[in-house]
Image (cartoon, rainbow, N blue to C red):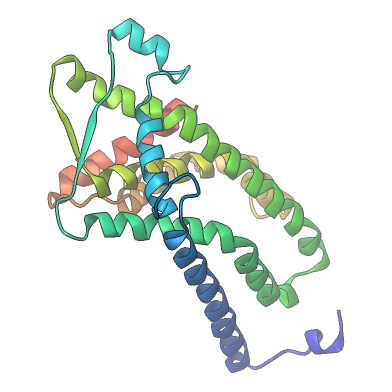
Length: 262
């Protein structure tokens, strides 16, 4: 480490540097999100944003009974197909979903640059031991998170939607959801399962840095579980005005993917 990095800077300089790096990261995310939202679908003969085709594909994949995981269950319960009608409760529902998906893909595309900005800011404060662990941690976290998202997309979320829809399909009730509710549920489920896959790595890193011991985790597991439930109830989108009912359904709907993932 050179002398300039060893010299302690005033707090104001740190704040200015942080704001500058956050500005760069935000601009990269915005540019990537705009590019995703206007990029044309190469398989379409006329101009059609790729994000629309992605929305159609996600909807089909979540309810496709030809999925090898769902086909045996559909045969057992006598379910021929899952038809979910998506509606917009307001003029901006569809726009919200487009913005949400565009922002998500934009964040994924720009994540290497964002991570570089974060690392450049915290790197002077890291010790050599911490620097040796950060690259393997980032690679391992990315691989585990991506594996969890793929597993959730092809297995957990289709199973979740199938079982949640089963009682309605068996009784002949038509399934109609808000487009914002449907895609929010899918995205939150993918993120939760992805993070669930990274939990062992996070625990291992914390133990390596002497910040957490297995004994402490076992003793405090009930508190951790309770905090996770509260966080799930807060971060999971649910536009219904009934606070108690929506919080309860949010927790149950968020836990179901975790149960199926286990």
